[in-house]
Amino acid sequence: MAFVCLILSVNTANAQTSRSATVSADGLIVLDASLPDVASEYVANISRFNFSSYQEASNYFQKYVSASAGRGMSFFFDIPNQKLFVYVDVANQYMVPKAHAKSVNVSDINYFLKAVHEGRIN
Amino acid sequence: MKNLVAFIFALCTASALFAAGGGGSLFPITTQMNGMKPTAYTCDTFKSGAFTGQTGVPLTTGGSSCPTGACTNPGYFAPYWETYQFKNTLLEPQCITINWTAATAAFCNITFAYTGTGPILLWTAAGAPCYAPPINMGSPGAICMGTSVSYSLEIPACSAFTVFLANNNGSRNTYNLNINNSKGDPAAVGCLGAECKKLLTIGGTPVPTMTQWGLFIFGLVILTFASVAIYNFAQRASVKE
Image 1 (cartoon, rainbow over the protein chains, first blue to last red):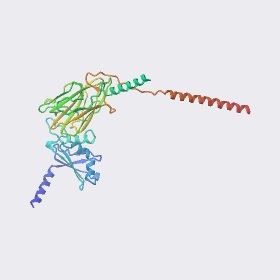
Image 2 (cartoon, rainbow over the protein chains, first blue to last red):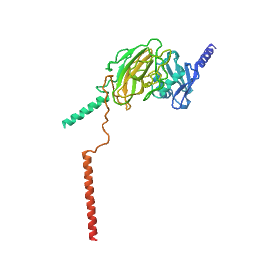
Image 3 (spheres, rainbow over the protein chains, first blue to last red):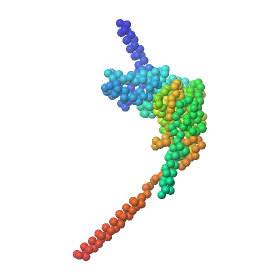
Image 4 (cartoon, rainbow over the protein chains, first blue to last red):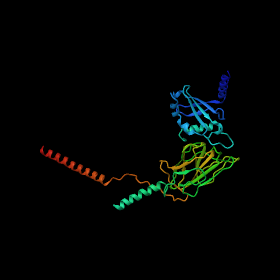
């Protein structure tokens, strides 16, 4: 019973921090910017790509994985449920410069993702 | 014959040197972002330093292409910075592409460039300065550099420009700097005191070679003989009739 409660509490905690993201047909990842502060987890539906393996999905999104390696963002692919998880280390992320007098917001990170998608940064 | 070969060799050597900016290429410039002037950067205008506190510098909001970027998003930390000053050695405007590459992405490094050799503008509490016209400004936008980043900027004829590289926080990286022209070849840039030159394009309307002229004239002679022969045959045929 305690284990079930623990699982439920973990799920509840995750649900509180997880926000949505979208992936366009050509592979641009856009995080939900309805709230300006950066969440630690974003989930996107990638069923439109119909990936059959983790490797296939990983290869498709490799440019994001490479550009963000060691810089406070990581990607996980849930193939059975056709979902992409984007994890952001909010306290230690280095995708965008830390602006004077303001924290990095979701728009800043979406700008970074767009730059990676367009090949301006890799 | 020897003189001709020597002339062609000298022409090729001169054009190669000229394409590299005159007197040999400065690139790639490899920096470890440690305050030491890179060996390949033989100019005496290397500067580095550290901005203390929450001081920032301007960046453009979008990846810039020639002629200029739009600076509306200034104010980023730069605890360590270094600048390189160059000169467009052509007597005409030149669209250059500044490219930084690194072995691995490490934390946050930023870059921008601007025409001229003025001081770096700092963020102040009163406002957010930008490099405004006639100064052109370019950067990849408000993003940390990855393992490779590039942006373009148009430099007026025989004019100076400054390339800025800075580290936001944490570990720095070893970067290679290359500056190319719009064709992807090494740009014609040099140190501030470099001489400016006019770019000569060898070529234009092709002139036929002697062999081609010979074939052309030979063809005309054959045509003339053929015309005469046909005329003679026609005359003979009319006489028989």
